[in-house]
Length: 269
Image (cartoon, rainbow, N blue to C red; front, side):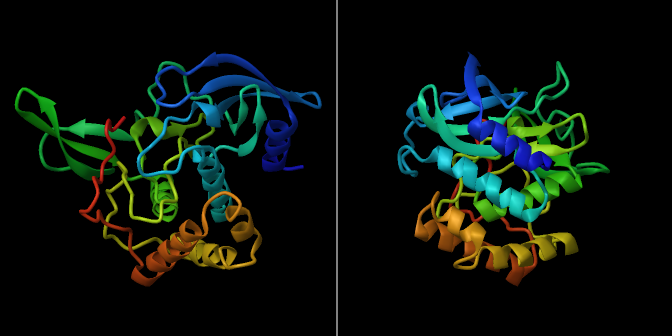
């Protein structure tokens, strides 16, 4: 059994024990222990009952969108979203996700984002936008020119992520990068809001084009991924995923802000 299958089984079948709550989250986010078959792990449990209603998303389905984001991430082969399942828990149905431990004392994504003086991002960084830092001063918001972030930018474009903040970037000790908090995804309208605009308008990598071409096939009607996604998002939203992938392949470039929707989430961290 591979790592993915092991964690999916553990998170799906294991006994959940709530050990705490992450209070800074806007929705109910519970830290849990999960145990099954002699294995155990830390995980996050987000019950549907704890979701805060949003004006532009239907009530009670953010958990499904988190699982859908995981499935698309796995289909790319990039493994950018921690193992995520939909199941019953102590407070009803919700999403359960593997907890990713990051080095103690570090803010999530701290080495991937920065504010710099001047108008140049500098070597190894990509500019995003100027930010007001108080007292009439501005600084340039930049992110690392990191291939892991670039893959995540492509994934966000596919799932139409409306909330890619700095705090949602988790560089693991083993060198892998994970993105979390994918509740506001898969809207049929363009909702892409992200701090990862540094590649906007630039050509996609050869790797990304190959991944997107394979993903298009997996999204075809009747394919296993498409069938699973149809259980989690609406038919209109699934059609929009297919169109976003097709658009990326047609243009061959990273998307640019539409100008019809705020392009950067607030607060950005």
